[in-house]
Length: 110
Length: 136
Image 1 (cartoon, rainbow over the protein chains, first blue to last red):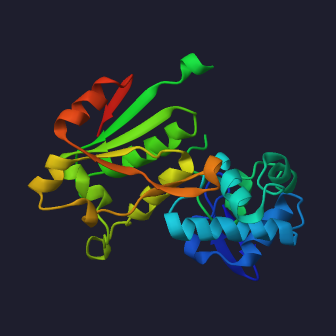
Image 2: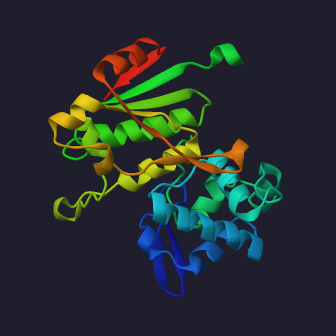
C-alpha cells in the first residue's frame, strides 16, 4: 500500500503504518487523517509532535498508558487522560496518533 | 485482581549486539509491563554491556537501541539489578553505565535511580523470590 501526495509515493505496511519513518512529512499525517475522516487541529498536532519527540529520544513508540502519563506530565492532567486522547484519536491514541506521526505500531500494542 | 499480579524477572546475560537476545528481551519487558505485572530486570555476565553508556553502533550497521532503556521508567519498570561481580570481571563500574531513572508521580515526579548494584549472593536471593524468571 502507499499514500500519494503531490505525485510522491509513501509506502505503508498492511496496517497503514509508514514503512520508512525518515520519509515522514506533515502532509503524510494530513493524508492519513483525511482517510480516517478526521481534520487535524492544533490539539492533534501537539500529540503527534510529542510522539515524534518521544521516538527521537527513546527509539520506541510508547504504549498508550505511557503516552497518557507522559502527556499529563508535559501538558497537564486535563490532557493527560484517556478520555481527552480518545476524543482526539477515536481509533486509539496509541495506534492512530503513532500512525499519523509516521512511527511504527506502539510496542506493547496487539 | 491482586492475586493475578506476579513478580517477573528478566535475566539478561548476553552482549547487546551480535545476537537478537538483548533487544528481544527489552521488547518483551515493554510488552509485559503494559499488562500490569511487577517487572524487574537483572544484568549479569556480558549482559552488563547492554546498559553501558555511550554506545555507538554505526560501524556494525545495527540500530542502537540503548536509548530505549531510558524509557523503562515510563513503563513503571524501575528495578534494574546489576551484578557487582560481572561488572568487576569486565573492568566496569556503575559509572560506566547509563544513568537510568524513573519519576515518582506520588512525589511530584521526583527523579530516582533505577539501577541497583548487587552482589552475586544478593542476586541469588532476588531470583529465588520471583514467581517467573525469563533468561535471555
